[in-house]
Image (cartoon, rainbow, N blue to C red):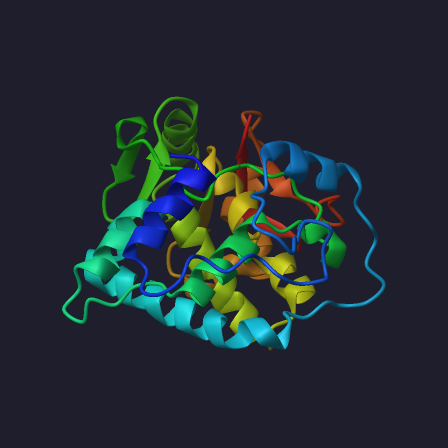
Length: 275
């Protein structure tokens, strides 16, 4: 389903008038009429990036729908479970809300915010990664993924799965999958949670979590960690483990986000780029 079809379907679930247009002035991608963005618009904006002078914050007019969307995404995760939430699509998420006991839905304003946070061009606040997903309603093909036991996470079949299994074999049982396949919905929740934790600072949030349309977890990358290290697996402490030292010697993987990488993302030694 493409973006226009998603909007039409979501509009049928919404109460009241038609969807609000995306409004704002911070990005060349934000429009003030009802024309819908196309992949061509996205590519054009990506080719005309600007360098940010200072950190950029989410506009105050988005704060209320932001908090409401975050709350509803948390509800959806509780309803479908942690593992299923990693691969849920927006169509499925909408249906979870529609058939919930409260029969709640995303409002027009919330849908407009969801649109904004997915389709905007983040280079204006210092994130220069490549867009990996063009449509908000993109789905993870469940036939192309496999769940890794005892992790709650999935990896794509083929090279990503083969790479992970080889990594486990070469390094041993102390290394494990900490994050695999992520749908648009999962990445959006992670990004919004990070955004809230840094007081709506878009620049700071994107240094830690890629915006929803820009994660390589949707196309094959995965994260690994050392058993027993806990949350520190997502810090530079992982770079000081023997597991990471061994990873650096392997020729079939690479690090996606090195120190000083061109994407504007913090150093992530745990993020495996499948090569």
